[in-house]
Image (cartoon, rainbow, N blue to C red; front, side, top):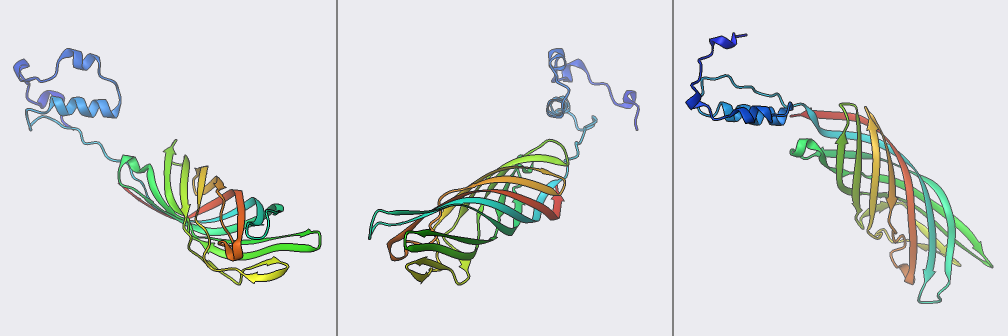
Length: 241
């Protein structure tokens, strides 16, 4: 530590700050850094203050599980305008989440990849006919996230994802008077989410837009929307500046 009197005295003609600069100075990091940069601008032998940049998250790996509430219906415009609504159904999903933080704006923006496994089964009797669907698939939602930090342990966030028409499926079937094998390719959809995280635990509410499950197979179309409550646990976190 050096005595402040040991630093050379600057003549008033050398100063590039005025009294009104000091009077209007706010006591926060941004304003103080700006002021001292200006004050020290004309000489290299005057003291300078270096502020240490805080460490922030740069990469997260999580596991997740969801409880979903969905509504599903089918119709075939080629045959009739009848709509077969299977009603509300509760099912579950499980997956992982990989999050990369972008190196600007204090790491509040990130890219998210969230592969998810889902088993969908629903069935209903209509007059003399049973309509049912049984699918197991892995989808690959990808999107972006904005995070608001309250402190080092608590934060909230909003997310938006695209679910590409790319998936892995497992012997999926759709039944209407006879059993059809579903094609592997499913329709693209979107997800909007908002949540909160404390330490390693996260809780997110998600809305899933309509997804075409049967991919216009034999003229059939699907309305399938859902909401989900997702719980995640952080397995790995890498921090940097």
